[in-house]
Length: 82
Image (cartoon, rainbow, N blue to C red):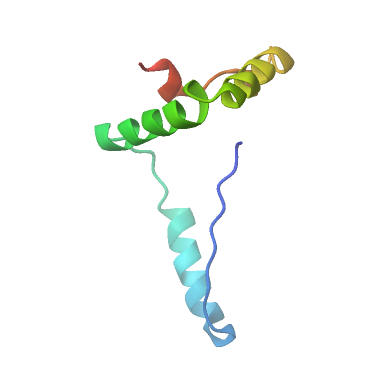
């Protein structure tokens, strides 16, 4: 729930290129405001996976109960933004 994975696929002899590309990603991180388009995609995904799915609603209620004092117990921001 709280991780992002990045995968690179390149030949073994390109380790230096990989290191350079990865260092650029790590060094030049910045937070940016999500565009309306991205927000709308997240809201639609939530609608499909949670709001219109009995199991999705059950899992959300279970997490809210199990993690009362933890962020996992809170619905996504997009879910509250409606």
